[in-house]
Length: 131
Image 1 (tube, rainbow, N blue to C red):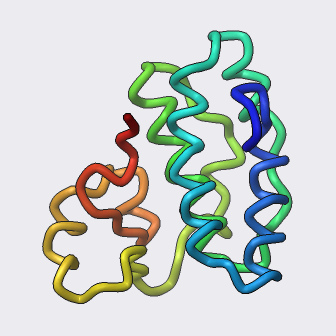
Image 2: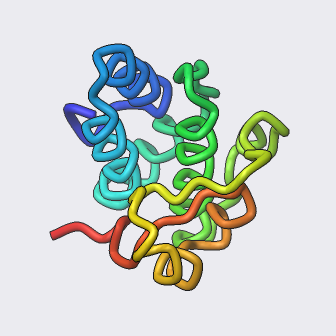
């Protein structure tokens, strides 16, 4: 997401490109920044950012992560999330601990927002916190 006006559709496309380029850490960084960009945008820009359903990234884990972060960002701001986040394809069949470190699983189980947990995506504390 180059600017606060980047849409979720554009972000998903950038994440997909990172995954094709074997840069999963960059893809994760872009996903985590969704919340920051949402928070720093005007109410009008927020609606524009998330209204259009993104294309698949090529990895269902990242699709679920994106939907979870969008739902979380909306919940924090007490607005309804777009309907597309509720589609079945945004829910994983098995758990994904984004950090990849088994030693952080307990932290991720406790710290993940419910919007991610219910999708099977687990984030460590402060993953969605920015400076």
